[in-house]
Image (cartoon, rainbow, N blue to C red; front, top):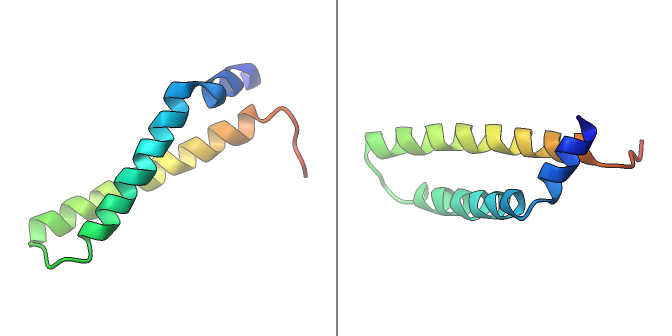
Length: 71
C-alpha cells in the first residue's frame, strides 16, 4: 500500500492535478471578492468544500507515500 501511494505521489498526473486545483482555488477565492448572486455564492461554497476534501486526500497520499517519516 505504501508503495502504491508513493507511485501516485510521484506521478506527473498527480502533481499537475494538485497544481491545477491550487490555481482553481485561487480563482474561486478571487471570485468570492465580487458581489455575486446567491446561487454563485452557494456554488463557490460547495467548491470550497470539495477543494478542502481534495487537499486532505492529497496530504494523506503524500504522508503515507513518504518513504521516511520524520517524527
